[in-house]
Length: 171
Image (cartoon, rainbow, N blue to C red; front, side, top):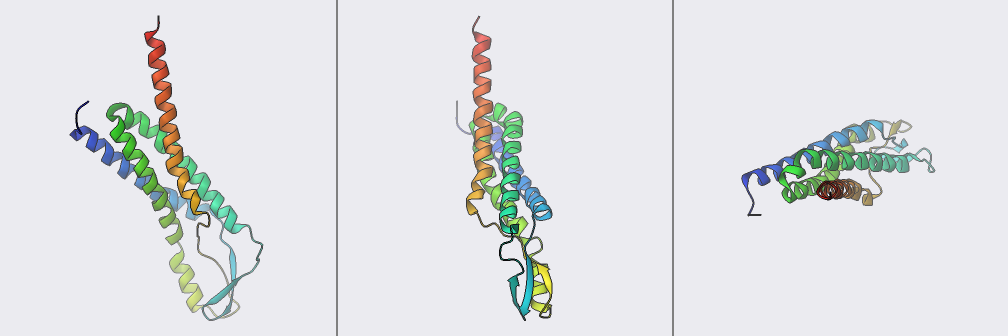
């Protein structure tokens, strides 16, 4: 096994870029499905939660975890089938680093979709106005879901391929 080749570098870059692009898509999905807490403007530029016991924050984190887990599995399975089997460790490294980028892209995209509307409503609405809060991820540990499940999917696929190859060699 020689040094890096153009094919391995291309697989690394494709895995990294593809995963990050999938993260942007995941952020758009998260922004579309995650609930937001209802706010009540009490004074100019100041809002309070309508229901202090709202489950919207936990549900939004749960949606992020679910989307990130699905994204990690898709990244790992498809990445293994399309890239890792051909390019080896370079593609696997690109997928895992891309999964880290995807988790960050999903977070950034999801939190920024609707943030301008929230800021505008908070600044321009009169006291007594009701509106939804912007989306935010409270459990930052959820950022580990995407790379973790990508890694697990690659490891399971690789171990399955090795077992199949060993079984084919044994008479």
